[in-house]
Image (tube, rainbow, N blue to C red; front, side, top):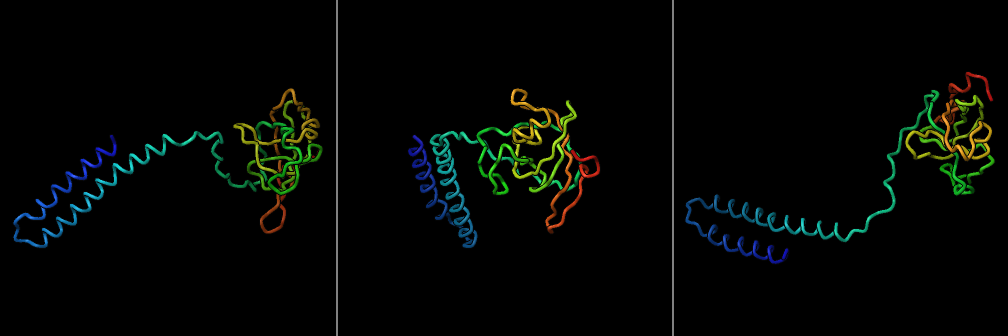
Length: 196
């Protein structure tokens, strides 16, 4: 049906061309300009429906994607300011997997994931419900769940009183030492308060 409509449209345009080109006019330039304009118009008219039909066919043949779109890359936060949000525990499936800095995730180490703190940042994490504190090193990116600001390995989560049963708790993340692009280090809000 689509192809038949395109063929009809093509023949209608071809039938009009000789009439328009054979018009008696004293202005050869006008006839030439008109012929060029009509040729462009005809080409556009022929291509538009074909593109629309091709797009419809491509959409109907596309398989649905199961992978969510990747979030936009956030800007690194080198301000050293404290952040408040929810902490979660790294899933066991990430144990021994490569992190953003190239090291393997160790559930018993001080590694943690944060979306905006530079990799290598040392930060103090305080459970705002229990007051318990621990220090971590940002070595990975995440968590990618709205409202969560840091993923902790099970050992560090336990140090602040976060259990697997709870899964999530409200925390304050205070950067202690932030690596700078030039190789230097900057002290953050966490360095100004007592260390854990």
